[in-house]
Length: 100
Picture (cartoon, one colour):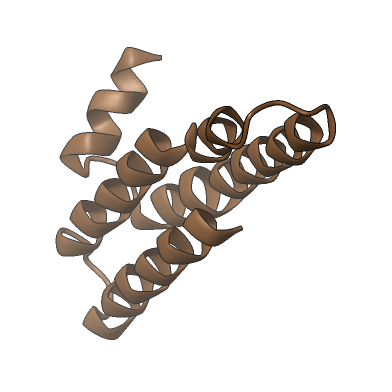
């Protein structure tokens, strides 16, 4: 597991894997679960600050996924416009996941 995290941080993953698997797939699932926990906590009467904590739990992973895509894109051997599009999409995804 730590090998994947180090490889992600260093941008040593193929861009497609960093973007589609780690950012979009795993990141979205983690954020949906965290948001669901937040809503469940709010419905259970948990203080708002604690409920928000549930919502922001995936933030470190989201940051790791964004860095992974960004760094993997910088070493991508394919067309530069695809690497730039992945960086832009990952940044937009990161912003959306903070809200979602």
